[in-house]
Image (tube, rainbow, N blue to C red; front, side):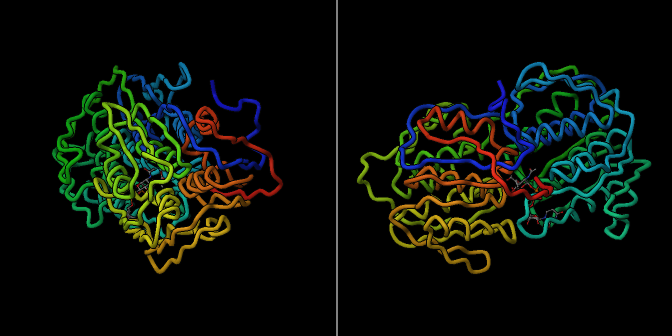
Length: 446
Ligand code: EPZ
């Protein structure tokens, strides 16, 4: 059952959180947002039907499904997390409507439609605002594979018009490690003539998941999860397969932080512990107990009086510390003794939430890409704005730890990427609900 079915999410709303209760109990992690978005796009290239399982029930996925339907794909929702997808009914290579700019991952349709139709006409994507988010590396990869229209000067009124006759394999060196460019190049290469090598590829778990999905559909991809991915193009991807999406590494990490910052004791199930290692290692260093099982992690403190130590963290591409856990981890660092350091090494401007966290008592000084975090005794309740998806999740963590009632506005940003967060936190003893608020800002993102 979808959460809060009666609640009208097209009205402006906030999360109302009454904090101060340690979270306790067990929680299940949903399918990975970023894997699902890549895989749904990849499904658009397949030459037969397929079924996707463990698809998260989040608004970014709903937008992506709508976008694919607008291309002509037949998509039936079998249950909350399972979709039957038949892309053989696709009748256009154009996606230029408003839906495209509501999510970042719509850029994967460039690679997918180039692979399927050798043409793609796609509006520039939206995205969470944390500085410049160029797609030059994606376009460079398509150009190397024979696409015309891939130079930045070819972009016409915000629409990228790509045409590759023929689409051929290429040696693609990414001078910055990019998740999106790696997946986009991999998608197009699956159906290109000949061999492609992606050098300095990103290695995130969801890259491996997209590659595993494509291989199960008949693609020939080797090396996903390393920095050299080799793809031999095939003329047909037969499909006719059921694929289950991996658990969400970032959702799991967010609940690890929520458990820790409230002084709770939570076991998080249906995750892959190795994906969590960068966070688990830092949390152990800070003094938290992290017990790993086969597919679960328990987070707790040995004694409520145990001291939590400061540390220093630097985000970097996988297997480094994930930038998508940076804001949540800063919340945790706020509760440590002394001064901690968070270095944001992936995005130019991902500390926009810091003034909001300061309203809750945080003592943080940001200098360029480094946040110096001074430990505080307690967060205090406040009305704050979710400036983006992960920032919003971080503010929820702080609100859960604060005594009193907080409101996190622009909460729809959080619902883009966290399945049933209200029910999941309520089951752990939190007091949280969605409430309508007055203000409204229309924007586009992902
Ligand atoms: C993906 O974004 C994720 N989004 C982001 O998750 C995540 O923060 C990011 O990867 C890094 O892990 C999706 O998967 C939909 P990148 P992406 O290309 O692919 C530079 C979340 O909260 N760059 O790996 O857009 C770029 O500016 C989100 O779930 C170029 O210079 O990120 C950045 O500094 C938000 N040129 C760095 O590379 C390009 O053409 C990494 O970006 C592309 C990227």
